[in-house]
Length: 254
Image (tube, rainbow, N blue to C red; front, side, top):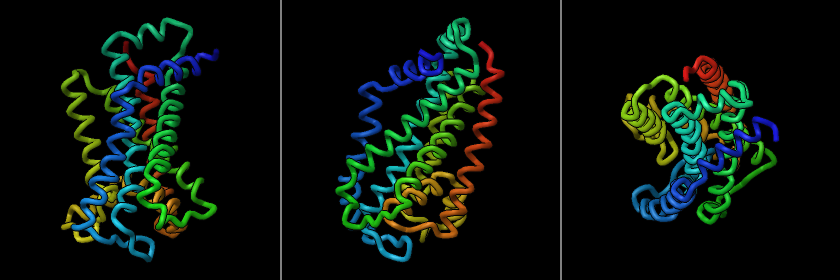
């Protein structure tokens, strides 16, 4: 087996445990079908793409983007644990190079991100099927969102894991950063009506771009100028953060 494939298999084996599956599948579905319909009394309709969406449909498609982001925490946690437990040194003493390690991390992010997006898109279909208007661009848009989102947020988690020295610092930083991404975005609620500077922060958050692209694919919003601009921003941010994460990983001490 190729060294990269062996490392990907190892990453997936240690990541796909019952707790992770509950967090990645059960929690989002509970949120969609419980909170989505419960909050409908507070948020009845949400404007999107020139039409009004029912809140459960808005939330279900937002959870696809949220899950793509959330799944990439795997990358940072694996790198952190490898450093803390001496596994990185053991891997480097075997038939593996830093390039193998980085490629395996990228592939793991992509596999988990795509699988997570597919699961929530399929299992949450009941919440938005009556408002879904997917065109030919639906699958390419969701795949683009999953790949660029996995690279962007996975690289962010990897950067954090290479810079911090203590477990407490790592846990505080990773949770703070990803909570900001999650809740200062349009994944769960629209930015309309939010006070400044919060409303502006929504549109400086790459998760907002990610969920907008997903919604454009799943709900038929189409490739508007805004969506194209958000796709370009995702691609640039993903490439930049991936380059930085790769640079830091190539210099990572044992």
